[in-house]
Image (cartoon, rainbow, N blue to C red):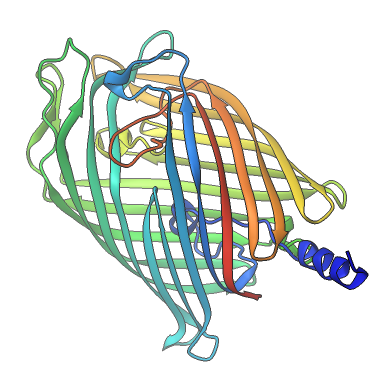
Length: 391
């Protein structure tokens, strides 16, 4: 191979960033660090799960499915004062327009459309062996429109608030144990409310690799929501209706601690605290169950050159859920770990994979047509980028 070609290939590898975007990244954080000013990224691959004990009646099953996501960002709208973003994946769809001069006075106006058409609700309880038992698992969808107004209070400190409207629909298909004869799903309803974000950010980037190397992003958020739901749902033994209004609080931390040029500690944490009676929100299967929950990962990102990285991590979850009676609560702690890896062939093409284990029956579904989940999850896919412009 000619030296000029070798140098060109090495330059491409050295500039390849480690980057992935999810629905949670876009909705739980306001100004998540992003190495791109503009990009169109397509990622696709296979995702699978393995279970300790199969129970297909409640979705615990070995399986492999397709997985993919698309992310687009244009950071030069309206004289570089506006940003357009769009995302679509198994975890949801997201569209956003933000502009810093629409209102004026350095106020950021943000319009967001959100959709989660493949929601899985796991209404149940943990027994003494920390096994998740079902009252009834069922399906639904969630659509939302939000308008926010934000401003930098000082360097790195951002405040945003605004109103939102949600529409929730529920399918009739349920997954219940044989001992439960009936489980009534909620009726479709509308909800609206106000939302507040406070975010502190001090992230520094490694420009060679396009990854965070130091600093943190801490986001705190809260909702006050009203709804027009009025019917009871659940089993004959434990049926409740939603209250007319609820409050919710949540937080997220992405913290990067450099150890050397090739090693970086990452602390990723998220958590929430909802009303004890918010039965619907407390049974969303895409995150830990319960009115109080937390998820923490301690990760060590190891770079081998600038084209390959591997990140082993340990994980812990906390979940405060109602017991079988529905009147008292239990506290549960789960542990696990995993490894994530990226291999960059160029700035436009990367291989992405991960494997993880958590001793919690409640993990995200790997399919959109039915609820399939398990303690072990694994993924392998390719990411392709077009129109890359670095920030």
